[in-house]
Amino acid sequence: MNTPDEDARDEWYSTLVDEISGQAIDEFTFERLRSYYVSNRTLAVSAISIFHEARKLLEVSPSSALVLFTTSIEVGLKVTLLKPVIYGLVHNESVADLISDLAVKHNGFDRFKPLLARVLKEYGSIDFNSPKIEGHSKTIWEEITQLQGARNAVVHRAELADSATAKLAQEVAFMIFDKFLRSILNGLSLELKQGGEICNA
Image 1 (spheres, rainbow, N blue to C red):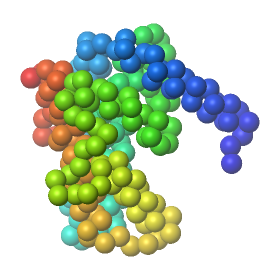
Image 2 (cartoon, one colour):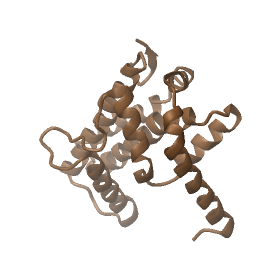
Image 3 (tube, one colour):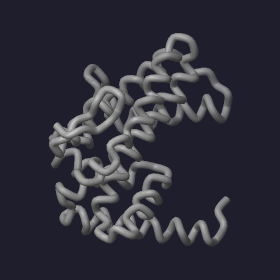
């Protein structure tokens, strides 16, 4: 249960995100986004390290692997895709870090889908609203929601995950880094190295 101050902060935050999403996308520039990645070349390293750790656990403990893959997905979306975009939309340097930090701490990706979709389309030539892993019937968003539910069942109800769910989490996490992030970076004349470091192309 939130305090009145937390509710007020969340309301302010929601209003701010709606304003940013609605009007500032058109002002977004290539250089602002690129400069964030150049200044934060290791921002993907932790999420990719968690991905590799999860792969080591896949055969031994699908439940543990699921938790780590889902963490990798969420951190990948928030830190490597969403935070640079939000930072790029805030033109006041002194508050850009604060606003982008608030954005990634807020739960739920639904309100950011239009923003991410537009940036992925412009810089990565990806239709983010309908991508699917080859051979899958659900969109990536539907699969992320499913994986978050399965992860929550492990963490909050001590339910064991099966190998198929853990392998799905691996595929989704791989898509976030190998397709989404790599495509945006390539569109910005940057590239993602194997360990997660961002370099000039």
